[in-house]
Image (cartoon, rainbow, N blue to C red; front, side):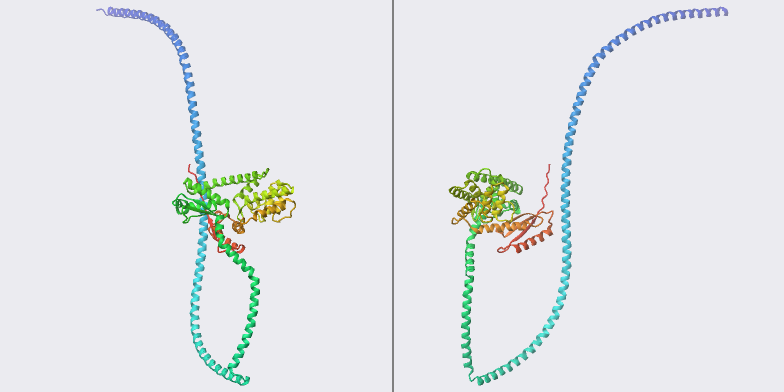
Length: 565
């Protein structure tokens, strides 16, 4: 085949192919352009639809999202408030716990201070013991020296005994010689006097008898004179002995109250374990509790009638309740003391109402009510004062004077005996000062102060009150002076002990044979307590007169209180 033809053929084929490819390409490009335009139109439609859907979705879901977001925000705020409240509660609990821890820290600090003080006291006692040990060593050395001295003295005594025996022999020889000389001298006297020995003895006896009779007569005369001088004193002693023999029952009646028990088994509960109940009761009331063999009864003893009444009522309440322990005892005693205070006020108001007295100061009414529990010379003081007021009022009415003032002065004339202040003045002066303090009329004040002639009488009411007081106390058996002196002695005993530094309370018990002195543990340590007891005892010996002996019991007590929450 011709190569040219072949080349042309090939070129023609390639050209035809290229033309066909180009035609096809053009056709495809046209189709693609149409497809592209259709796709663009479709894309624009889809985009428009998508935009519409997006706007619809935004309207639906964004609003819902905002509402949901609002709800979630409200829930979160509620949870935050709850969390804040819980936080506040936890903070309050932490504050309370911190306060309790602070209280415990303070209690521990106080206990540490008390322990430090106790250690100081122990060190002081140790130092004192060391000093006493040194004194004992010195005494031991002195005893040894004395033992040596005693040995030497024994040797000296043995030598002196030998000398005494020789001296005794010489004395016997001298006695014999003197007897011989006396016999010779008697013979010479008989010869000189012209009388025998028997005659001389008879004359001497007669002379001595005459002198003895004269001396006896003088002695009898002196004895009679002394008897006259001492008769009144001896008579007083006899009367006092008789009074003392009959005074026991009177003292018991005025210083002892009886509390009945359901059974004797209650005595053990009154005493308590190791005596803690009875000690707590006596410390709270200041009254001695006597548990003896008396069947179904215990005794409360004390000279202060208000304290004794508080103790009696408290004991009855504790026995009725059945719960007897130190904390309950203090609670019941305090409550009973408040009830007695109310009863005192009621008694004062009742007395004022009975006597139709108005305008009395509340404190005077309270003092008048205290007289209900006090006896004067064995006579109830409130009943005596009411009686004096009525008598003075009757006499004032008969004389045309102010009966109301007389009643007022009669009721108040003895309030100085129950004054709570410790005043060293007669009770009439104390009562007058109280009346002046609470704005009573000057006539009433003068009548109160003058009813024992302590001040001059400046009003006609004063002698009427004095006469009414004497009439009320003059009834047979109305008064016993010994009881008043007894109470004053016990009050003086308590006042004397309370005057020392560091003493908080003083109670005279066992009819004045013992005083219990409660001291402040912060001011008085154990070593000072011993010296304080000795100082009080020495002052009692110097300033008071009393039968027998008085026991001074100094009590130092530390109480630590804490609360578990």
